[in-house]
Structures are given as C-alpha cells and as structure tokens.
Amino acid sequence: EIVLTQSPGTLSLSPGERATLSCRASQSVSSSYLAWYQQKPGQAPRLLIYGASSRATGIPDRFSGSGSGTDFTLTISRLEPEDFAVYYCQQYGSSPVTFGQGTKLEIK
Amino acid sequence: EVQLVESGGGLVQPGRSLRLSCAASGFTFDDYAMHWVRQAPGKGLEWVSGISWNSGSIGYADSVKGRFTISRDNAKNSLYLQMNSLRAEDTALYYCAKGPAAVLRDYFDYWGQGTLVTVSS
Image 1 (cartoon, rainbow over the protein chains, first blue to last red):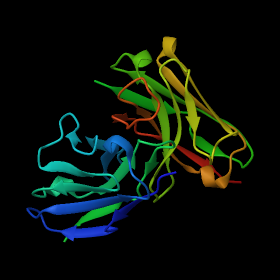
Image 2: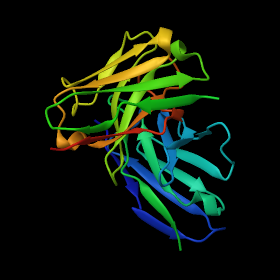
Image 3: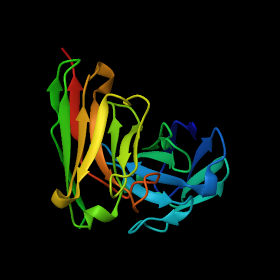
Image 4: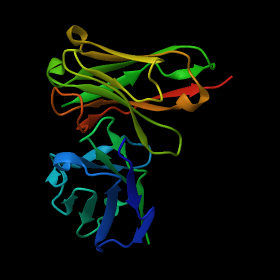
C-alpha cells in the first residue's frame, strides 16, 4: 500500500501568514488522485481539495493544492483564525486508499 | 443538504460483536459509493471498508478483513458495518463517509459526526 508522510508534524504560524504543508507518497500516486482534509477538534473531517488541485464546494480560494507523482502541497495563502486545525492528505489512486498521519497547524 | 447520521456504537467486550448503522439523507443514496473510516482516540484516519452503489464491489482494510462486513440497503438509504471478533485495537470513532461517485476507490466528500466504539473488558 502507498504510505503518505506529511511534514511538518506541527506548524506554528500567525494569522495572516502563509502556510505550506507537504505530503510525500512512498510511490507515485496515479492520476494525481490526492485529497486534502481539514479536521477541527470534536468535528468530522472536511474535504478541502481533490484531484491534487481542485477545491471542494464552498472552500475559500486561499486554500490551494499542487503537486504530482510523489510530492504534493497544500498552501493556505493568508491564515484566518478558523484555519488552525489538523490537515490530512489521502491518496485514492491505489487500493487500499490511505491517509497521511496529519499536520497540526497551530497559532504561534 | 447531505446528512449522514451514525448509530450503534458503544462499549463492548473483546471478542463480541457490534453493528453500526448510517442513515443517509439529502442525496440519491443509490448513486454513490459509501465508506466507513475510523479514528482511534488521538490518532489519524484509517479507511475501514467501502461499498459501491449496487454492492457489486466491496473492499476492506487488511486490519478488519474476515471480521467486519459492510452492507447497504438502498431502499432504506442506510449503510451498515457488522463488526465481529472485536479487539481492543478496534476502539475508535467510526465515521460514515460518502464517495463523490459510484466507484469504490475515491475520496470522501461528506462525513457524518461518527459513533464511538470502545472495546474493553
């Protein structure tokens, strides 16, 4: 199965700053079948990005995804207070689908 | 509005069984694949099982294969997970999640709030 490694484990930034989260796959993710989710404490995950770069319905354009092959990035252009959460990547190009271990984005 | 409401969780002894249910509304249930994803306390997300729109394609994580059975009733807009031979490591919040299409291998565009399963003696 494809192992996804997210970095950093924790990212400490201030509102207004730019956040760059990384997701690296142990083998190539076919057709850029990679998604990103946001999870806040006590809540279910929320889909942000699919197909590596397509924003889900209702997701603000400060969230963007990029990458292909084994290296993918989620960028939040200007952090809002509500963006501090845990972010997970997920690949769905190979079975079984797998998730990264998560990056916690915390307020500095 | 898409709604997924899980039920059936609780405290169960190791080796016993439990059946989870997910009631879906707000979309045409039999057009989409459905999944169970779990999250152990303080841990990340793990896909457990998925079922295609017509139950023709089913998948399981290796960690639950042979113990868990996924099913759906399109007439009742419901998804199920029969969990047998439960182990302590199955303790988790179990989410019902909707796929964006009929196929099995996909991302998850809507999630329920989860039902907690605790396996302990």
